[in-house]
Length: 540
Ligand SMILES: [Fe+2]
Image (cartoon, rainbow, N blue to C red; front, side, top):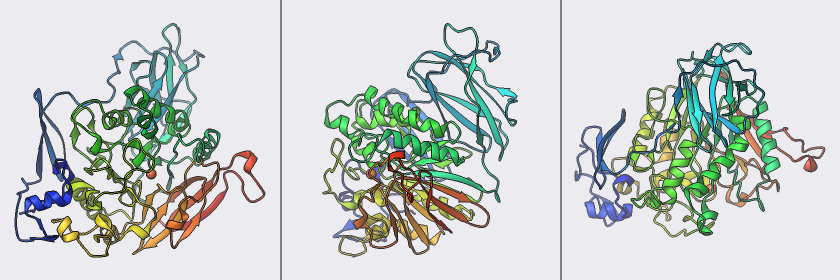
């Protein structure tokens, strides 16, 4: 019988330490290993919420079934603004501008989501096919409402295939459809394929005085696009709500503006490379901010990040977070899939810790006084993570998170502590007591299961380190006009390089190649600093 663990979903606002004490699992800091306190109901777990109107059964993934009981509102869903109409598709002879953005998302073997956003009412459809210039398939025509993201699904696609598509659009008073420039994407690669993907660290668009220049961000986007990645990761702190909380400007509209603003940059890449989001501390997509109502930063953010960017949900292709959160729905925060010979795994602490993992909302530096054992993946995510790693036969395994434990400074310097390494600040192991029922801390799980690279950011620099066969790779940020290695003193070993740019990772049957591609404003280029140059590279 499984013992109760420090599951954040069930902590009910108390600390992990308090919860374990009250449960009888932790007495005086020691575990009563033989005392079964809770029974796990097979693989099912029930979360009951207060209030009254509906009972909804949601998706099932192998390790966890979540049943939601009695909550007041239907969770937010995609494409609420979509309205399919059956009119015949006109010829594409128009020449009207499209005042909007296109971002691809949640690619699969037979699927691609095309997420559209425009400032004016527009009718849209997607024409697509396997041959450039001769797209054969097309979707229905949909109504795109002003300022409302719309997701059009392309399904029934062939695996490991290059597709070409055009978004066709027509304003209310326009006779004919016009077409955006043709773009291309690739469906899931077969094993044995060679492909590449890209990653950027904290873009921090709000930090225009210290590390964000919009022209430099666009330069980085152009550099990414030139490498044609199959997909592109943002590792978090790309939608900071902290300044607007601090200035009493928090509203759903203001939060939506953050996500809409990022699309203006990311659509350069995202129209041909699906975008994957990883949650960061300043994004404040965080459980501790939920208050049982629809009016808080966590709900605003939770809705925006899944509407403005199509993110994976657990199903046939992806595994991941099956929990439905009132007023948000699926969080789409942790997820995994296989592409070619590689396993991709995104993990998240912010939606699963009962406390502020790093800074408290509205503050840049925040309160650091917290019990570090309260920073947790939670029981469901831990078990899913372990099962995902152990169940994968992929040659390469890549993990993506904002940072080790979602907070702190440094890479392998932090790997011994708390859920990551099992020890407290005095170097004493508390893992058996604080994670009863858990087999091993996160670093050990990664090392035991052959993880190739753990990608993170948060510190705003490039660092490559290695521990127990796992590469710890800090990813540079894309728009830092100061070209600085921030927080470099936190790293006691490894290759340390300053910003600015992104990582282009090429996966082939023979090896993995990690290239640091630098970005420079033209005024900052020198003989040795050229925009788009390969600054550093290594093979695994
Ligand atoms: Fe951060």
